[in-house]
Image (cartoon, rainbow, N blue to C red; front, side):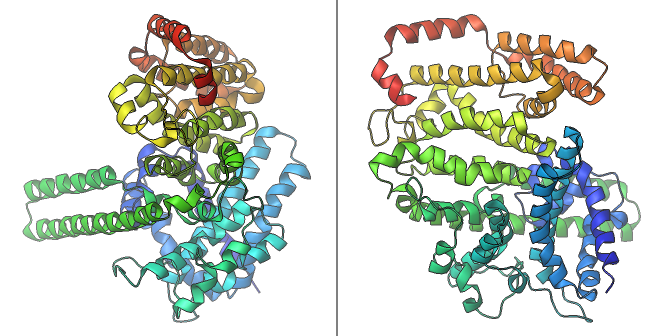
Length: 534
């Protein structure tokens, strides 16, 4: 049997997509929170290629060619093979250059993500020559994937479309929107019973084994949801609608031929109507999902006994954030958004202070061993995490309403005493000093760690640094990297980061005011309270 047409298409799609994921813009990432029409328009609007040659459009005809090859089993086996290939490349491969090894690892990860995305969406297409590809019928159960030694994050990433579909089937009795096409077809609700988040079959096959500091409810909620479920990108929809309306006005004003003007007007009006419908659909969906999270808020971490409450943040990082944050940029943004939701929902036994402290101390040092794509994902996650922290630091009203009013900012879990604004400023400076120490060390040894560090720091422009003295220290190290000639790629990134720091220099705070505040806090703080905050 000839499988060459399958890999030929996959190779062409990967070749187009790799450089675009490497330089993923904020607008594109924001559009990934939307429904397919907005995502497609965002991709097309930022590309210089024509629509007829665009792989996203040609992707629609691929299910036909793949189905004609009759190689469903071969394709699903790739999900099992690619994770092994990643491990083999790291531990047994013959690639000695670190940069090339990282690129190979990232390429395996990208192919795996695109393969899961393609197979989970293949149920949308029907062909006259073959039957529809059923992702549900091809993917083994979680227990079987675990027995095959598939990493938990890979198994749960592959199963997420099925879990989401099963959860949607549970909610379908109340509301089902006909404008959203299901990614996988099914004959009956019984087909999805094993993938329901509340089913015993799924819970007993979860990869995590230690539930002392975490519950299966939170674990399943985290791994079964996506960015589309919990974040409504209203600004992105409004921007797209405004853009189409500008084109509509231009067409009515500039096109002289009545037929062309009528055709273009009809097309723009249809697109605007479709975007408005998409926005309403996603608004209802997000409201329903967030409502479900709020309904089960007490079950997420409420069962944790007092002796294990201080280990909740470490358990969340180990079992949730670390395995998923470097998978895709969308997953990185989801991780930050999900735990912001937990903070806003006032989840019992969830300490936001401890969570942010562990993120700074445990997540940021990952840049020492991150590939290029992982570093970009870490930058997206850290930026989304630090944005509210910086806002609370320089806006006391925002801190009082968004942070101090929540139980997550208690000085101890279960305590009614909240972390004061002055205490938060002290902790904030310590977090950023920790980041500065790691960043300076990485830039000092840029031959080994400079590439990943610069990729993360570029993403953090605007939220880090916040003090002029730190910016000057970073730019001094960047000057050394900019004049070296051995590593041109790092030299170019250093020049870019240096330029970005110069542009935002006027927004940085003076060192003197920070030192005065810190000195006054040290003179009045209570040791017991600060120990509880830490």
